[in-house]
Length: 83
Image 1: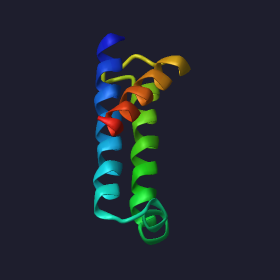
Image 2 (image 1 turned 90 degrees about the horizontal axis):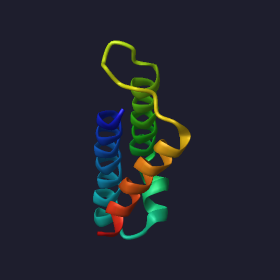
Image 3 (image 1 turned 60 degrees about the vertical axis):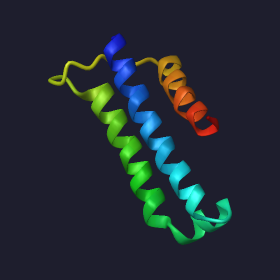
């Protein structure tokens, strides 16, 4: 279970890092949403794939995470945005 949390936290760090890179390149958050629909579609697809991999993967050795654990890993990823 703890390795699943560590893996999921790493993926959340990566997802928020992708957002930070796009924010650095653009002048405002509104331009990112308006001009980069493909970026957001891929990011959402990446997140959905992560949910499917962690919660429904039986051969990868992952344990299903509870809602609180998902929120904690997303929170750790979001905190990395401010560092």
